[in-house]
Length: 436
Image 1 (spheres, helix red, strand yellow):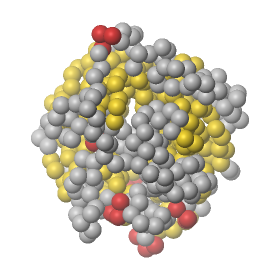
Image 2: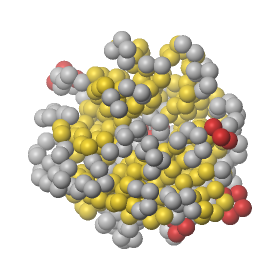
Image 3: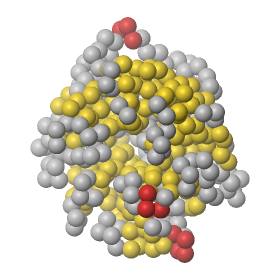
Image 4: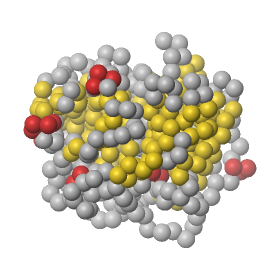
């Protein structure tokens, strides 16, 4: 993603002109989708990481008490953080109940920042600590925070874009107090300096599942690839060993498992994506340990498609599931409202689109939120999408699904989104009981 062209018009969300019945978990929200977990459920509270899309762009942590059905408040963890949704905080729950948050700027420097909440007081946080990531290439900076714990290693992994513009990680054995040196995790094979886009899902025990592209869809007609990382080794979905990271170096696309074959077409300029380019959106793992990948495919600025690839234990079942509609703005022509999967039951799917998700018919409105139950046998023709929002005067984009034992929280950004540095959004949603 590159800096958008400056606009004369500043994003403005008039909440009085948008009466709705959804829960407002946090005002002045905003997140990108390449950092996670952007929101968590912990001790009955929803923690949300955001960066305000106006003013000085502070990095924020909002806390909402589900049991009392009321917001506890919002904490500013960094007062000036570039007004960029790529920079939003992510979270990890420590064994003593504290919450660690980490956040970083969008390719501006080599630092990530961290704070801890106090046990029993989610609005009181320690002073900020800045951690430098030392990398040999002076062009390498830090973007996109992703935290995953592997308890069998007693390690907390922080994945980010770093070495050579590629996925990189550092590890901590004290829940974020100190960190290792950066490790080059995955290497692009597209000529020149390109950036694979990774989505991660962990089982918190021993494995991180990864869905990844070749590059940015504006630059290359991406395929979608999959691999697992466990005990320092890379594996396919059926647990076949690919190679060892420390002895054989970072993984390359040609060594992974191909899930979706992109076109390989070149980029076509600033306001267009490569025809047929795929982009990762969501990855989750079901109770059998099988990964499910939600992603987008670009046909044109006005026609994106949502697809899901599901591993059934012996093969990938890949199918188109919805029409994604138009891009959010031309400068980022592959920006959609997104598709996301329930982290406990990935057959529960939530999307944002501005067209009829089953037919692609332009409804003449804003991006709305839909949900459906999707099995491996379903196609776009058989899926019954149910609207969560209707006739909205503003955009509803970038849904996230949170789960605990008996609750599902579906939240999304609602308001005015013009570019990733110019937006005014609330984090809103619904809470529902789950009996499984």
